[in-house]
Image (cartoon, rainbow, N blue to C red; front, top):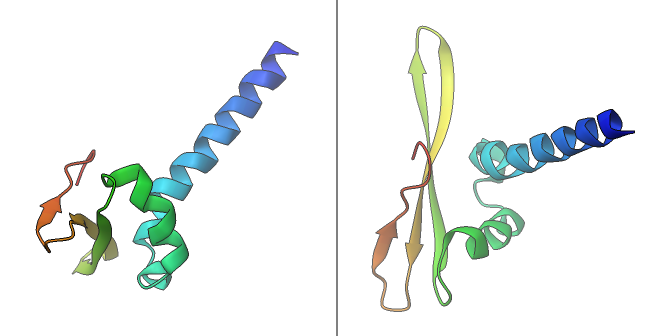
Length: 86
């Protein structure tokens, strides 16, 4: 029973990491309001809006996708987030 519970926790953790790290970087989600609404309370302070600058890089390994997240306050001031590898 403990082994199954441990496996379940690992699967749930993997799904959560995938949802927070991979999905926001996908090109199809660049203008998706649902993704932005989900990430805003996780990354920004109250009263701020999340802006995601997504970009592509090309090299010999292929195409890479990344994003730079910013929180913008009501005065229009940007605050770049320093989360993990960003």
